[in-house]
Image (cartoon, rainbow, N blue to C red):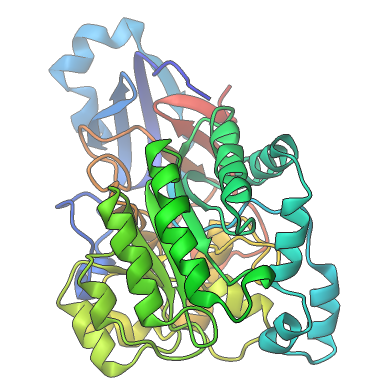
Amino acid sequence: MARKPSPYLLLTNIGQLLTLRGSAVPRRGSALQEVGLIEDAAVLCSGGKIVAAGPQGHVLRDPWLQKRRGKMREFDCHRKVVVPGLIDSHTHPVFAAPRLMDFEKRIAGASYQEIAAAGGGIRSSVTAVRSSTREQLGRQVLGALQAMLAQGTTTVEAKSGYGLTLNDELKSLEAIRDAAGHWPGKIIATLLAAHIVPPEYEGKEDEYVKLVCKQIIPIVARRKLAAFVDVFCEHGIFTVAQSEKVFAAGKEHGLGTRAHVCQFTPSRLETLLRYSPASFDHMDCASSSDIALLARGSTVATLLPGANYFLGHKEFPDARRLIDAGVPVALATDYNPGTSPSPSMPFVISLACTHMKMTPAEAIAASTINAACALNLQESKGSIEPGKDADLAIFDFNDYRELGYWFAWNRCSEVFVAGQPVLGAA
């Protein structure tokens, strides 16, 4: 939904403002704790951008503001907490139905792999998406986006990956584009044709990879339907060699690269790192050598604890090991119908604190500036500082640490995108 940026907006009486200001690179190590906390703060916006953010007394004395104070829309934040709009950098919103049979089988003790082998899992979503129209899928995506916005998320990465034919992957990406046209936030589309090998290509995996590389990727790139290619590089799904072919084709056609890796088994990441991927996602089983490689580079490790929670796993991604090694870490929901049917970034932040031993400050940085880096959006998103987009989420808290403390309770009261109110504050 294209919205005209607000000419002038002034947020005052902010109890705590988390600016996340700093250089436009992913935070790592101790820097992940630096959230740029300012108490008794104000934020000044114009034309959809941040003009000033800081102590209220300082902002109100700004000469630029003094000349325009009479034209300013002022919003009293009533001592609440203001953070950059949250960024969900890994979602699968293009599906047709929840996977309830899988849910019950898992409750009865079946594993993810056993469910997939019996024809459930991703394959069941593929069947449903192939029989759905673009319009039906677009409505599904938009509903998910609205649920995300209601909890403070203003930027979302959205993957295809449940079509697995040229026409069905195009249909899925077009559904994302349709939904984006009715949503105020920013959508980054990702082509995930290499999600699994579809049933009609069983035993012909290399032929399917060739289809993805020679047909699907070029057409998607030509139609500008995606910014990234993604691949599920995992034992029994796509090998490192096959994943490298997808990355090479994506790069050839001007698309960024990202991958699902090390969710169930370790992968050899050195080969894929040659393509400078923006993000490696899941990372539950990363080896010490792969962690050392990531610590030396700029690829973000995006952790998805919602999947571990919903699958009933006792183990979660080892965030402390990654952070302490110097790997830049982001968080995302992994919103999807099978393993993480939650659109809530605040819930993910809570899981990161309680199950991965991240501090609230680290979890918020991982959900804002580092998530922006995982989408190559760090120049415009992820922090509240002059020149960046005026995407702001307001939470009814006294202390920012409450964002990791409360769970299953939506405390987001207002959201602004490009300086315009899109939730509350109307």
